[in-house]
Image 1 (cartoon, rainbow, N blue to C red):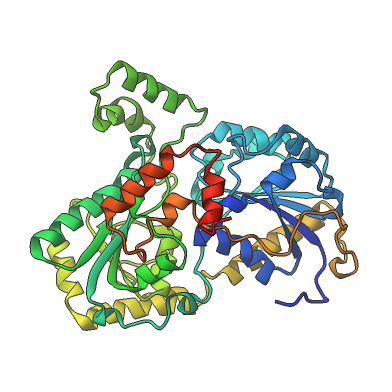
Image 2: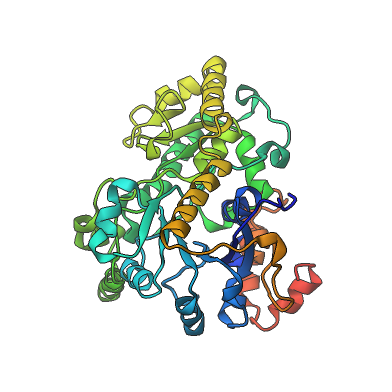
Length: 441
């Protein structure tokens, strides 16, 4: 996209370039370059940490959620340069149930003027009480939005009723520390896969790390299935100060035979607050864009979806699973529900990145005015020659073990696991040379 002469205001976005192999993260970052009325530049966190970037060249500095703020990814000199910066300071943050108190301390000590949080609006005051943050405005936003140009990435879509793979899923095992929402990601896959195998229903359902799919292969996978499983995202268990995980570790050390259920009963159950962080996940938008029928655990999904209109609601005790597959066998029902989701969620553009960035621009603009900060005419004031900032975020490739797990590779799961095991035994110092030989560097 060509830079428009009407753009004012230079924004520096600090992000983690090694995380952009995940499509949602890259699309989130790139949306600002594509749609913002401001002129965005991008700087990898490693370059920010070395202190060589002149922040005074920018009107605002934005920290992206790909940098895990409370977990040591930002150097002390990086924090100091940010504290000294006199322009607008903005934070995008996710996974706020981990290291919450440290995040709150950093928000106040920097201080950030504007924070885009994935805590639902109804819960913001509970997590970030306004009397603790007199200088900071919090805005609730979603974890991701509808991807642009999905058709270009997965090719021409086949009507869902004509797809031979009936149902698909990829989950990720999460520790019991994340509570029921985390466990549901595995439970839905386990139960439905067993159901399909017993009845000979074509399915591709996995939840182990070796089965993860990345890049364009992920979009092709979604578009290959008539339906896909899903559930709400997030965790309703906050480890405010890190002591929860420490307590669990001590308990497991003292009781090696303790089960996840034991841990849940003793440490998690009393901390779980239903509805605190339930969120719609970016996968919902990906399924809608691919016209893949959503079979989802019952939930609110941030108000984006309506049951039986946009998705087939699956009870958490699986008591209506027979009914779900009866509906999936009805071509008219399948195509109709996929088309409604596509029309209402994708074509309406209510949940697209353009709308998201318009909202972000409005919040940033309001803060510029409130704080009476001047804006640079971006076109007439280019960056200094020594700046490491770029006009585009870098799109990285998955780490090698994850590259090996793409479904597009003709390896059996046994071979994949063997290759990962071999890779992990190779000394770290030798791995870069092997990557070069493989064309990875």
